[in-house]
Length: 258
Ligand SMILES: Nc1ncnc2c1ncn2[C@@H]1O[C@H](COP(=O)(O)OP(=O)(O)OP(=O)(O)O)[C@@H](O)[C@H]1O
Ligand SMILES: [Mg+2]
Image (tube, rainbow, N blue to C red):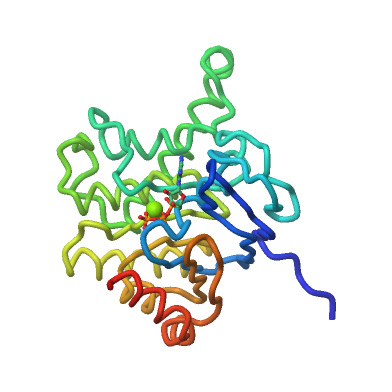
């Protein structure tokens, strides 16, 4: 049987900064709706992979394709418009805008009606606005953000701000969501809530996700497959339970702790 094209395919990724090789011939695939995790000690190259995927860095070698279309050399905004959304370690919300306003901004690239056409086609603009509001309200429901709807993002408790940022990324209706340490700085309860939200997002919306995370228990709980990196090299790929016990992975983590 012919093999299906994966949603995302990266191969031979090599990224150097002067004498530092951040990524050395790294390859992996992510299927539609898959929850894929990237782990590894500090400086292993995890964030560098995200920066290559979303166009912030251009790898010196290698290919990246989304549904068969090359992403290498495209600008971050173009890659976002193709359906790759990202959340940051520190929530990147507009602090003076409300949660709902921040989520509406996430939909900006989906809005066809600009200001002038909006004047000319008031009816259409109104219908579009209603449609976007409804989509945002669905996300507010899914992530249980109702109590914070009209709060300025700058006043949200940390865990809620991270959740609202996930909401903003979801509002873009991405095909692939890149999550950089979504539970960093969270307490146990917030971490468990986040695990539940990520599983709900996958079940309800079917969005593929790549998760970079230091919290191993979260990775074990939610990931379908894991890629382990060390010094820019892929040292293991597979099911979480397999990768966790891989001798190279164990050594990489012990080496880092020593
Ligand atoms: N802009 C840059 N200029 C120079 N070196 C860089 C740059 N970005 C990353 N590096 C180097 O590339 C390597 C990989 O860094 P990267 O940030 O991808 O690691 P990481 O796995 O995300 O680490 P952490 O767990 O600490 O976030 C490191 O040696 C880092 O110092
Ligand atoms: Mg990093």
